[in-house]
Length: 269
Image (tube, rainbow, N blue to C red; front, side):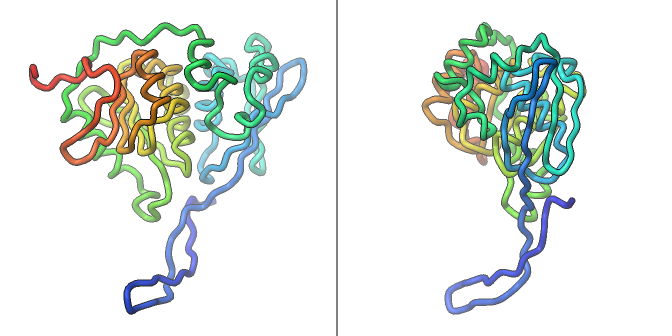
């Protein structure tokens, strides 16, 4: 199924109104059910584009700390917007799902009762201590490359994008989806499928930098998260605690660094 479709619209401008065809993003629902030898559990329901769903599923399971590696998934079957995922017993899916808010399990931003910061602390992960230092031009270059690597957005203006870039600003994994959480999960899921270590990468996105987005970077041990959008207080708080350099409003020749600016080198300034 294509990720876009044509619809008939009326376009209004001062003193004119015309009927014409326009292109919009196609959106579908995807329900995820997890199981092990004990039984099944409803995990999440997401709205997504009709693209191959496995990167999204793997990424969401990983960033939600349901699985620790791709090998924890025994079997994945997707049919008619229903994904059934068999997980190893060692993951303890029933206990993990019981700790999540019931409402949180209906959306992609899955986190525990105390929110993203509490979930990160409960994961018992140490702060990221990365020696990587990058130049501002690297981020500006990478964000420009992301904007040019989003064909669905270029046609419709209706998607978010995410990417993993190297420390020189070159993109090696890119994804689009209707939601910013989904786009990041797709990128991290693709990295898992490729066996890629994300700890030397930059994570780029096009949405607001909220706590649940920063949590995904923290779980994947990514030291940089940058966006064309703004940060909110939960994102800044979690980035400070998790050791993530958080950068927003990366546009043109400017950016705002919200957390851990010591990893951005301004030519000695």
